[in-house]
Image 1 (cartoon, rainbow, N blue to C red):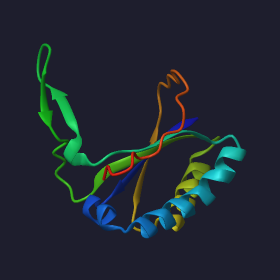
Image 2: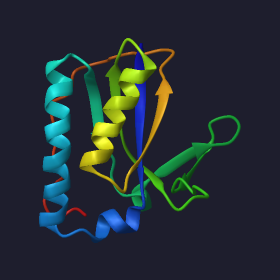
Image 3: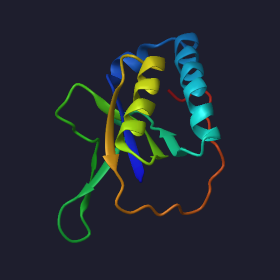
Length: 131
């Protein structure tokens, strides 16, 4: 079964991290990612940009593009994973590992009903000076 793991965090907290603090969290998460990848469980993952640069398309017909996600919550969706596990217990344990590496994050687990892998894009890094 494929699962989407949605990573929520208090955006202002994440954006306040120094480069060293951010690098330490990402290094800890890499230690969790590596065995998940080796075990064939970790699929696409993305660290999303700041919500202030987000846009939402909504409304009838062609819709209207408006600024931001306007979530009514303190936490924002800041990234996601796609993982493949045989059971819900296994995906919960993977989330616990992610949480050990990033203890202030919240992880939402959602079964995926349809997965379209699309084109395999190259790995990206945050552009220098952006963020």
